[in-house]
Length: 146
Image (cartoon, rainbow, N blue to C red; front, side):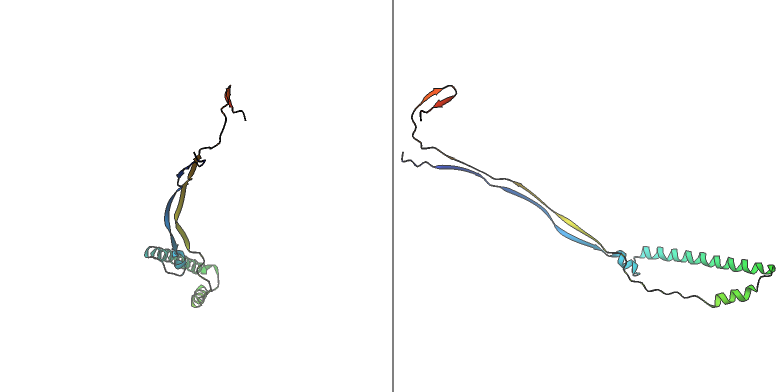
């Protein structure tokens, strides 16, 4: 033998498993547009019904209070008719400046990335080329007499 022995190698390649879903960005601006008056039919009709109901109840309350005021004429109150006419002639206008939208859009990002892997292995073996003397076997080990 010329002193050269082959190197034996056994390779197991690493493995990578990738599971992904591309990201999707979903932006919901409905609340922002609703604050500006751009609503869908259901919400718009619901708001109109609520407004009409409140105006109806305010009108009934005003008529009842004016009727009660006119009924107190017999208690020597000042003239109710001119006061009611004056109150109805001067309508109070209210105005305001506001900044919209007040709420933020709802932003949702969907998607995922899952990585799993298995480590690779590399095993190698080379036979030794040492010249050794035959020794005596003592117990559980071999005495090589070096």
